[in-house]
Length: 316
Image (cartoon, rainbow, N blue to C red; front, side, top):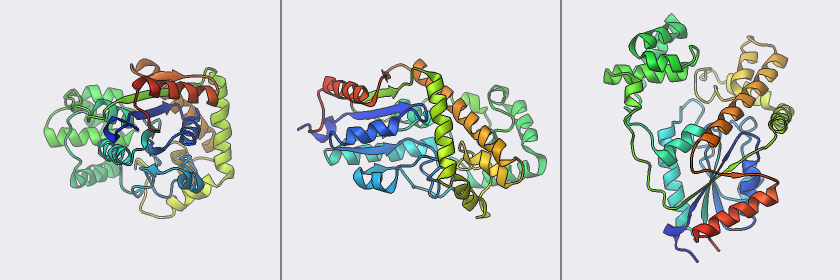
């Protein structure tokens, strides 16, 4: 049997609805593994249906990590994920299990596998100040301020993307330097040991689009609107939080705020999910080091098994 420090980290990435989770669960039936979520929405408690979070039964069958780790009112960052995931990987290896990272949040994968830029820590007091200014002046005015102080970042961000505008302004005010400059100073990635990266690919884009539409309607039938309404009625959440800006949640939130009719919101949610999938696939195709997985589940399992054997370090 391999020693814990020599077990590889298997990373399963792919577009939303591509079958990442199904592959991970099937792999768990073949060898001792534990799953680590790399999904920026599954970290939040009370957000289960719209995030396609593993069911209670699946969590009983296979040990999962980084699910339900914080409240939707508390923003979770890529930097925090890198720390939490690195710790989870070490703990899984210590149990002589194979750590399997599963998810499609690109920034999380980049933070863990490639390292993040050296940025100042968030300041709750400054963020509160910026939020108050945005409430008074509007997000467009805050974007204009960013354009005056950091034109490169402002051009890259959508004028309504308050979450990222706020962070960029926070960096400017904390450091006196543009965020675009700060992002160019890299921090080394953690030492993860041997890593096997695989990406679940769907050859026919129309098939992926059909899956996305079907899954969104299934989520609606399973009670997604009621799930979002429970968050909406809490009173302490708002649509600028990372949790509520998650795909599907922000569209239905607009319905509950009486801004968008429900059928329109559903259509927008499906369209936004397709756009997310396109970004994920583009990134995976252009990023070096990823082994594409094609075909059905059985073929994917065989390819993963061969890749792990090539490393020569598999759990028994």
